[in-house]
Amino acid sequence: MRNQFYLFFLLVLFIFSCQPTAQKTANRGTLAKNGLVSSSHPLASEVGVNILKKGGNAADATVATFFALSVVYPVAGNIAGSAFVVYRLKDGQIGSIDGREKAPAKAHRDMFLDKDGNVIKDLSLLGHLAVGVPGSVDAMVEMHKKFGKLAWKDVIQPAIELANNGFKLTKREAESLNRAKEQFKKINSYSLHVVREDRSWQEGDLIFYKDLAKALERIRDSGRDGFYKGETAELIAKEMEKGKGIITKEDLANYKAVWRTPVTTAYKDCKIISMPPPSSGGIALLQLMQGSENYPFTKWGQLNSQTIHTMTELERRVYADRATHLGDPDFYKVPSEMLLNPEYNKKRNASISPVQKTLSSAIKEGNVKSIESVETTHFSVVDKEGNAFSITTTLNSYFGSKVMVEGGGFFLNNEMDDFSVKAGVANQFGAIGGEANAIIANKRMLSSMTPTIVEKNGKLLMVVGSPGGTTIITTVYQVMLNVLAHKMTMQEAVNAKRFHHQWQPDIILMEKGAIPDSVKTRLQNMGHIISEIGGLGKVDAILRLPNGMYEGASDLNRSDGAALGY
Ligand code: DON
Image (cartoon, rainbow, N blue to C red; front, side, top):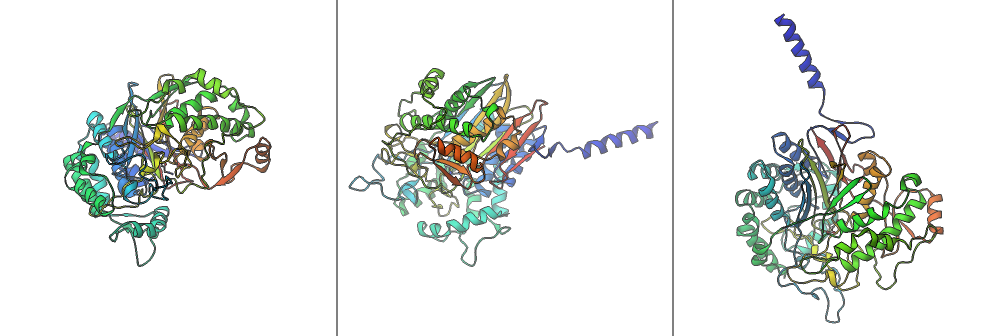
C-alpha cells in the first residue's frame, strides 16, 4: 500500500514537472499563471521574473527590471532619464508616479536660439545642453518605498551583476552602438569603452559596464542620495562643466518625483487608466478612445480604408489639441477637464466627413521626414496577486544626448528637445507646441509616453505601452483597439501592422506592407497623403484572460524583447 502511494506520488510529481506554468501558443504570446514581465530585453525580463519567483511583488519586479534595462539596454534604459509609471493594485487602487526630467535652474526660454531668434541646429539634441535633470531613479526609489516587499539592495543587485559580469550583445544592440560611434566620439572628450576601434561590434560580443556597476552600487547603498548627491552627482556636475552644460549639484539634489492621479475614461465596458500631464499621452489616448466609441470599427475591420480614415481624423484633432493645450501642470493650467469631456470630443469630431479628409491647419507647419529611432522603452509587469505596473522610461533619442558621464558609465538624456524650443517649430518628432510647453527653469517638458492599464468589469484586463516619441500614442491606441474592437489576442494585437497621423505634418505614416494598393488608393481619393515607414513603436503588453491566466506579448518583429512568466 505504501509503495502504491509512493508510485502515485511520483506520477503526480512527474505530471506537474512536465507542466510548464509559462508557455507559448501559436497565436498567443507567453501564457503564465503567477506573474509576467514583458520588456524589450530578455535578460531584463528574466531579472524581473526571478524577483517575482523570490516572492517580490510587481513593484519589486518593476524596479529590478528597470535597473537591469539600464545595463543591458542602454540605448533607452537609463539611470539618467525619465520614467512614468501607472499602477493598478490588486484591490483596484490606481495611481501614477512622474519621474520626468526638469529643466535645470539656469535654463531659459530662448536657450536654444541664436541672436536672431533662430533655432541652433542640434543644440537641444546633442551634447550637454540637451540634458534635463534626471528623474527616473527618484521615481524608482519612491515606488519601492511605497510598495516594495523585498529589500532595496536585492532588487538592484541583479543589474549590478549584469554590469560587472558582462552580457552578450544582440544584433540590434551591436548595430545601435556601431551607428552611434561617430557621435560618441564627437560629443565626448574621452574614449568611451562602448566605442570599439579595432572593428565593429557584432552580435554575441561580450560587453561590460564596470563604471555603471559602481554607480548602481552607490544607488544600492545610499538610495536616492547615491545618485542625486555624493560621487555620482559630482561626476555629473564635472561632466557638465567640461561640456558647457548647465546642470548643477543643486539641480540634482532638488529633484523630486511626483505622485499624480492618473487620467481615466470609459470605453464601452472598460475603464482606461493612463498617465496624466506632463504626459500628453494619457489625455490624447483617452480622447481617441472616446472618439472611437462612435464608430463601427469592429464591423469595418482593422486596416480597412474607412477605419484608417476615421482614426486619422480623430488623431488630427487630438494632436492639434496637444500642441496648444498640453504642458507641465505645475507651470501651466492644462484644461484636462475640457479635453476629457465626452461632449467636447463629440462636438470636435462632428466635423469628420466619411468621404473626405479635413485639411490640417496650415498655420503651424511641422516637418518630420522620418523618425530617427524608437528608443524609449516600455515594460509591463503583473504578479500573482494581480498587481499591475505599466512603465515607460526614456533617454529621448537613442543613447540620449550621446554624452556618457566620465567615470559614471551611463548616458545622459536629451530630453530638453521635448520642450517647444521655439513656438511653432517642430522638435525631432515633428511635434510643435507653444506657450504651454515653453522652457522655464525647473519645469518638466511635455512627453508622449503613455503607460496604460485597462480594467474591465472592475478587473484588470490589460497593461500596455510603447516607445516611439509622438507615435507612442497612436501605437498604444491601435494595440488597444486591436484587442477591444478587433478581438485579437495580445500577441496578434502587438504584431499587427500600424499607421500614424499627428495633425502636423499632414501625412499618414504607414508601416511597410500594412495595406494593399486598393486601400491606399481609396485613402488617396479621400485626400490623404501616405508615406511608408519601417516600424512604429515597440510594444510590451500583458492581457489577463477570462480564465485568470496572463498573456504576455513582446514586439518580436520590431525588437529583441521577451515576455517571460512563471
Ligand atoms: O517623452 C517623450 O515623449 C519622448 N522623449 C519619447 C522618446 C521616444 O519614444 C524615443 N523614440 N523614438
